[in-house]
Length: 248
Image 1: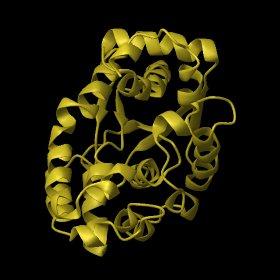
Image 2: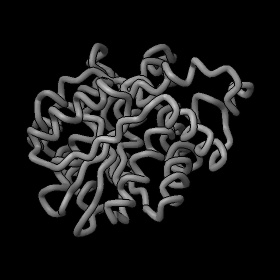
Image 3: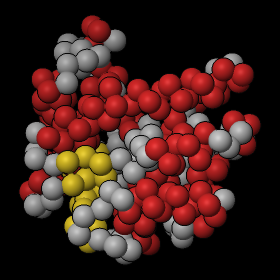
């Protein structure tokens, strides 16, 4: 576990500039990135969501423990709907893909206003550490190959979409979990070990995060997908004619 912690630390350090922003939800992925990044860089955290959403609540608590500045982007229903439409123009796709970009669009805009040029994201963690519920329903004998395929294809999917949104605001998106050395190490850990913590998911990552000094409140936070933790999904579902809904 110490070796994994060291590799994770190096993966984050490789993505740093003197000053960076972090897409921050208060979960284990973004908290690990922020904790390591503050060792070598000036770090500011950015979160987006509705008033009293879970992501905003956790981001505030964990940011205080990390002693890092947090910029909260509280989004109204009108702003969420308008931002969704802007995201669809930039990345036309089905509803479930586009809604994930709404908080990213908002924090990238805020980071640009704070003169940031680089933002760090936790993409890749779910595929490495078996973070999604749907992975547990996949045939176990085929799962490792499937995860490797999903991880490789991130460049065409999530990483591509996030990068495209960030470029609208002259920000370079970087992905510490999308790292060849890290992937090689993690995919050599037996799939049974990576799947041990069914309740919280990503138990191997949570253990490594403890070694790195990530706050326990983040380590013990149960996984919530971005659209749910931010409160955005519920609002967008009220709208019946958003672009992309027919593609879903």
